[in-house]
Amino acid sequence: MMKAEDYSQGEAFQAEKRTIFSTAWLPVCAAGQIGQAEDFLSATVGGWGVVAVRDKAGTISVLRNACRHQNMPVVGVPSGTCETFRCRFHGWTYDLAGKFVTAPAPVAPADARSPEVNLVSFAVAQEAGLVFFTLAEAEKVLPLTLDVALPPYGSTISTDIACNWKVLVEHLLLGQPDEARDFAWHWPLLALRRAGALAIVEQVVPHTFLRTRLLTHVFGGRAEEHKPSGDMIKQACEHLQADRSAGTMAIDDNALLADFHRQLGAAYAESPTTT
Ligand code: FES
Image (cartoon, rainbow, N blue to C red; front, side):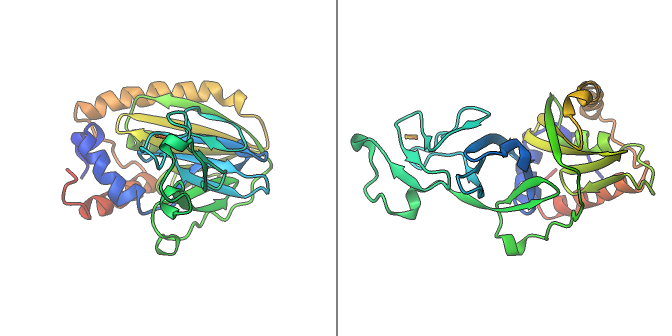
C-alpha cells in the first residue's frame, strides 16, 4: 500500500533510484532528437545526469554527465551539436564516445590512457524509436519488449511538472479501459498511444522526487499540436500531487494502475529503507 510520504519525500526517491531506476532500461530520448551526426542531448533521468550523443559514424552513446577531473557536469546545456565535449570548468576534453582526449597541462591527468579518465559509458539499446540506457549490466536487466513498429519520428514537446514521477504515471494510466487496444504501458516510464495514423509515446523523466518532465514524442505527425494536452496534464498532475501530499492516494480503477502499484510494491519490498 502506497503512503503519502512515498510521493513527497526524498528518501523514497533515493530508494527508488536503487530498486527501480538502477535495475531497468530507462528511456532517455527519441533517437530522432539526436538525429544528425554530433547531436547531443543532456538530461537528468532517475536522478542521474546523462548525455545521449550520436557520433560521426551514427553510433549512439549514453554517458554520465560527470567530468572525471572533479565530477562537475561536462555538458551544461540541454542539447546541441559538437565535435568534442570540453568541460567548462578546467578544460578536460572528451570525444563523443566519452574517451579522454586532452586537458590543459596544469590540470592534466597523470595517466591520460587510464580508463579512469574516460566518461562513464552506459549500455545502450534502441527500440520503438527511443534510446534507452541502463546502469546495470545489460545482460542482468529484463530485456526490452516494446516490439512495436511506429511511423517516422515527427517531433517532441517537453512539459515540466511539479510532481512526483509516480503521480504522472498514475495520471497517464487513470481511466484506461482494461482491454484498450490503442494504449500500452511499459514499466516503469513509458506509455504508448495510437491515434489514427499517429503514435504518441509519453516518456516520464524523473528528475528529482518533486520534479518530473513529460516528453511527448509524436511519430507520424508533429508534436506541437499536442502542446495543449501537455499543459492539461501538468495542471492535473500538480493538483494530484497536492492530493497525495495531503494523503489522498490513487484508487486502482483499472488493471494497468493495479499492475503499476503491484510492481512498485515489489520494488519497495526489496529496499528496507523505502517507507
Ligand atoms: S571538473 Fe571538468 S575539467 Fe575540472
